[in-house]
Image (cartoon, rainbow, N blue to C red):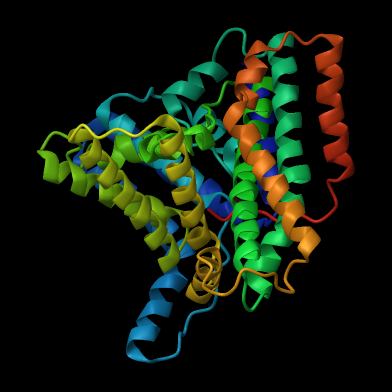
Length: 434
């Protein structure tokens, strides 16, 4: 791709990011300049001290914007003093582009990242399809694509796949996820108590909402990337088909999982220092995954529960334990669904409210949060969506097999038009703050 094309994409990406809040464009630009300078220093001296300084700079930015309130609120709670800090608005996608730049620094130190000019690096970080919701990509897999000789050429196969992925992603987000959002909010945020059926309907609605929201973002990112001949890494591979918790994490938020593996789990020792150290490293990694998702103890607990499940599964594997496939799928899905309750709950009370209802500790009737009709329609819709994700190929797999006949093109256009019509209806954004 020639200089003008790269410059155009950088300007488009900056305008896209500034559209939400202009002042945070200075934050993005500042982190890009900082990390580029640190990478240049690492290319010259290959010093652990420089790497530590550079990584600490990134963590400081992330810590201030994402965890400052959490830290001071907890200090205030322990000391009994009122919190003295103003609420900090989290910049869009700060966790994504911070992790992406940390990976570049570490890869530069390890000799795995190619040296590049400032324009190429800026484009790698700010490329708008992946900027606010991932996937978290590595420099050595993206920048060479921008510099390929055919990067600026029209590729009709990429355009066809890209438009399909963008359209299906938009449909997932606007039509499916956002349609479930009002029911989730009623159950989690508005109802004082939720009986059995309401609780299950609410929890399953969120399990579906989160999946179609985030996988929708990812499909749109992959699709937009393909329109520019850039193949971004896939972030989802049918995670609700998983028959154990380890498989789930190999299929859910794939790029976050590989980042944690490459830059946290393996540097901690991975599986090289004995079984007990391996289990400790696994659990610690998932605590950090939980904290990465949000500044709250519910996220830490959510990460801890997944880490604990991973540890138990590893021990089970090492002792030769096996479950029938269907039993493994049911157990994994129910556990993931229960953990999503903690992930979504604003307060501990909200989570307990849902759990008590799911276990039948309230009653088996229906509350005013959802009507009898709402309950069964919502349960049926969610079970249908879950069955669809578990039984059929995902959108990325389908896109690779598409021949783009008139029938498939018409179907793609239908998804796009329906989504566009609903674009300005009720919307909620889940992953932008992560």
